[in-house]
Image (tube, rainbow, N blue to C red):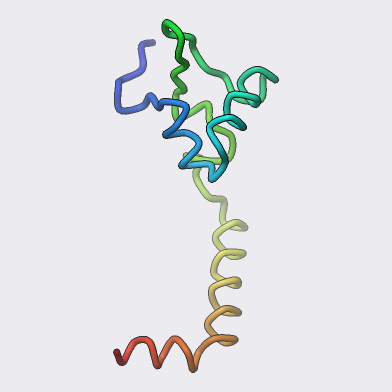
Length: 86
């Protein structure tokens, strides 16, 4: 099955999504941690091959996110309310 262009990323785009450097993405490709296709001198990466993104959240994941948001709001409630007024 052929991937659509919108599903493909450059090394730079993948680095931005993952929050790591372009060099680090290249190291992960060479180490086999990220699957990529070589196109000329460059690589392209299918979004589904990026570790940890584009996977649906489980109900447990959703609960953990909700709990983290609640904790953050409780801790920073005063600041959040002040920011909301500006």
